[in-house]
Picture 1 (cartoon, rainbow, N blue to C red):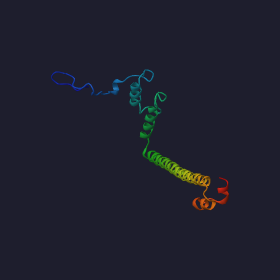
Picture 2: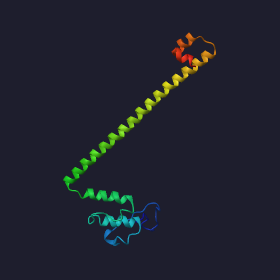
Picture 3: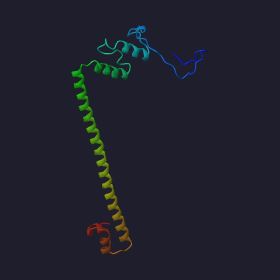
Picture 4: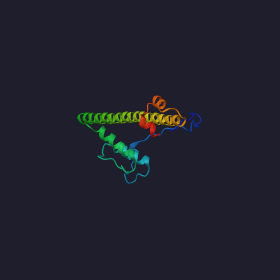
Length: 155
């Protein structure tokens, strides 16, 4: 169906049209289906009759469609059990994801702290080495940098 002027029949939009599917007119067998649309129509038409949907290997979407059909066919008790198990699964996934994210943040923070500490220590050694090269007294280097006698001697 397309949008057209009633009097002239002129098509008003090439970008918009509606297609109505009449399942009773779709008579292809599983073997006759060739296109993704054929696969969808066949599975939708025969959904109530099928224990497992056809063409599972064709598209990953059919796996999802089969799962939805299986869920839709559950009785109230099965559906409640399924939803409870799904909630537990999702809660566990969220816990793991959150723990992983927090672990990464902690690791990054520790890495930054360690890097800063190493950088400060290296900076102090460089400063002490320059002070020693410029003839500043041992005691002044020790006082300004906080290095031990042994550390200053090894510069």
